[in-house]
Image (cartoon, rainbow, N blue to C red; front, top):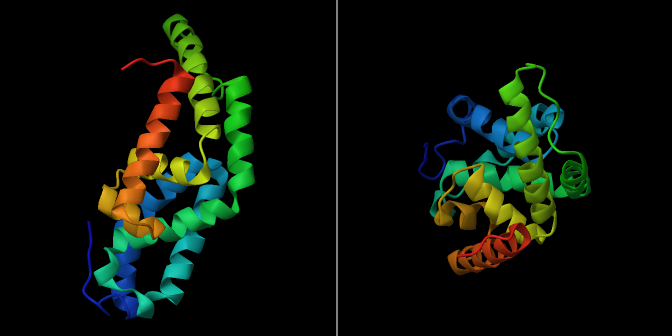
Length: 177
């Protein structure tokens, strides 16, 4: 994880290091949240926005990684309707077909389809804030502090959104604690 003191990413040369270190991670995160075909473009847009705003980066508000996830999450928010349609479609149809043709993979796929459909439906039932927190933690592997910095909310807000989301997901998936 790269963190930078104030102004340390202001120069284009230093920003190139930020890009090299974090691009693939941000692209994967976006690809998990939206259609993978969009991930490359939105990841590039994330870094374009970050590059344009690099002189305003404030390390006191969080690290570079959380800052980039915040930009990416905001871009994803603009594509929210497509994200919700994708989760609802997955809930109806399941994940894309597997071309391997092995008997065990077919059985595994049937089980995965049921699980993926239920999970996608449950995620679609969360509020945007709850879904952002869950997916930043699950896909981005961000800490509570990083999620708070990425979304521009307090740590307590992250904890309460995650708690509500967990309860909703447990209820939707029929999981008892």
